[in-house]
Image (cartoon, rainbow, N blue to C red; front, side, top):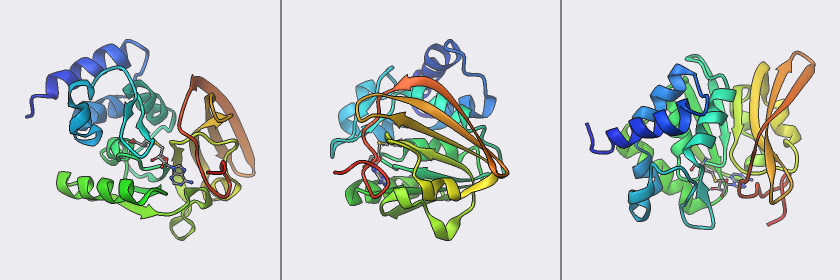
Length: 214
Ligand code: SAH
């Protein structure tokens, strides 16, 4: 029990359920994940507010609704091995951690990756592995992944990352230009790839070999 429990319940009711999110496991994970820890002490008053938060190093932790939508679009299930590109604070990985089998998450900024790793250890999330690298190359040693989530804005889904998606896998990513994107859901069906576009969004840029220049 922590005193943020009521705030989380309210966040789930007013920001997620009222806007149409339905996946029980996703809602439950967001009721349980201590966003205030990931948001850091400077944000403790607004950790459960309806907005994105600054986490330093010019990076942000997405608005709760955006985390909810992306997680629901991923159709996460118990047996999934998931790749996340853009660890940031670690909040999105923590939400996934309670729903899926394992989460592999890549972050290019060393200080953010180290801090996230410390948080995961401190909170007892033991199915998350963090790597410091350019995530636009994916994580070839651990491929294939049932699900892949990119939490930084990409001009296009990096080719190596599509290759690392399992034959019936699902990938969710904000795709567009540097300043405005839409959420892309990509579903692999053997050799075929299905694409659908969902809500408009604004993410910080994915920087790397198959992303934007720094
Ligand atoms: N999922 C995070 C929010 C991500 S913000 C959370 O829940 O808090 C986007 C993150 O992507 C930033 O931390 C940024 O440093 C990282 N990023 C940008 N380009 C990247 C790349 N090529 N590989 C890995 N991480 C990248």
